[in-house]
Each structure stands twice: as C-alpha cells, then as structure tokens.
Length: 148
Image (cartoon, rainbow, N blue to C red):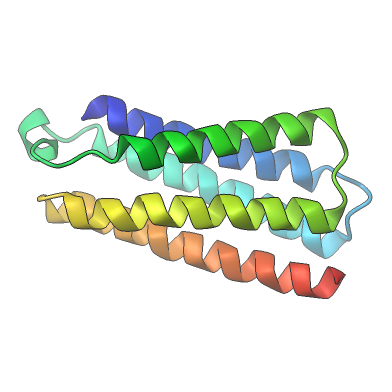
C-alpha cells in the first residue's frame, strides 16, 4: 500500500516539475506562465497530502484493490511529458493540450481510487485530488481556447 501511495506521490511531483518548467518559458504570455506556476504549487500540495496518508497505521490503509495499470500509465505519461518539456520548446497550444491530457489521466486514477478504498479518510483525499484535477482541466481549457 505504501508503495502505491508513493507512486501516486511521484506522479504529483512529476506534474509539479512539468508545470514549473512550463512556467519558465518566456514565449508564453504572463497569464499562462502564472497559471503554470499556480498549477505547479497545487501539484506540490497534492504530493504533501499523499505524504500525510503515509502517516496512517498500516491496517488503516490496507484492504483495497490497487489500480497499478492506471497509476503506472499516468506516471509514464508524466515522465514522457517532462522529458519533452526538458528537451524541446513546446508551443503553448501543444503544451496546453499535453497538460490537459495528463490531467485527464490523473482524474481517472483519482476517481477510480475513491471507489476502491474502504477508509473514508483515504477516499476523501483521492476525491479532493480528483476535484482539483477537474479544476486544473478547466484552467487549461480556458488557456487553450485563448491561444486558438
């Protein structure tokens, strides 16, 4: 279980790094760079929230079905996106489209895990992550519409 939460935490940390890198792109409008900075900080908060789950007793976070495939898929997508951000300068439309795809993938992981945990405290954390991912999607869509 701890391994699963650590993997989820890694996904959030990757997302934070991606948004932090995108925020440094001087070719993007200031408003978009500020949005990427805010998203980076929110992803850092997601990671901290997952860290808090690791403080629970082992018996409080066991007895659920792990969605490794969805989690690893999200991790691979985030790693691929981070490599692209680090290796090439993405135009803002492509960056936003890829970030939106990443957030949608995260939403699937979080929504599925809300249903799989028997512990309401853990389910609540994943539900909150899902809601924040939904807000991230709205932010990214808004900026994508503006650049089209």
